[in-house]
Amino acid sequence: MADLGDVVDVVRYGDRALLVEAAGAATVPGLRAALAATPLAGQVDLVPAARTLLVVLDRPPTDQDVAGLRRLVPAAPDAGQTPAPLDLPVVFDGPDLADVARLTGRSPAAVVAALTGTRFTVAFGGFAPGFGYLTGLPSDLHVPRRATPRTRVPAGAVGLAGPYAGVYPRPSPGGWQLVGRTDAVLFDVDRDQPALLAPGTDVRFREVG
Image (cartoon, rainbow, N blue to C red):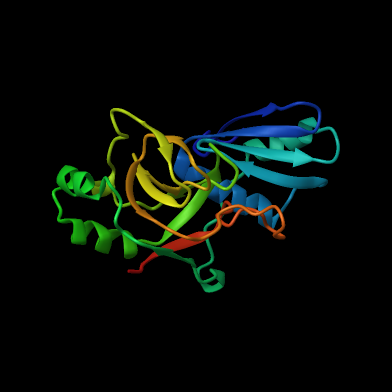
């Protein structure tokens, strides 16, 4: 086994998958990139989460697969091949924008400027179909969830919580700090890729009136 700096452990997950436990959230995208570039034999899907990566196979995993994954080294992104980020139009009129400004010691306009100047990356999906956890949020914009969650957050609401930004794909309860809204369709089963914010996608917020 390697020095456990990147991969903490690899465990069997059912009869056709392996779960890679990473040292931290920042490691997962690199592990995913490494396996996307050099997949295991019979690899059919990669499902990232906050600190894990599920490797789905079309066959039972072997001890050799486990050993190989334990030695896996994250791949660095190739800047020369990085596609342009997904442009997401956002109206920044969220009900919590003033609270986020107060919590971060900025004006609302400065919060918007920081958000539109950030290149986010979808680290993983969860919570609801089409919801992507966006990483890259500047540390001074990390804000806590609301003390009292809302019983209904509208579809398209753009929110912040801890180190993440996210967009609600459908109406649902939620406790994120809402700073804006978008008309983009986050999830559509009739699209070739139903989730607009798929893991690995780079995203930029563009302010619209």
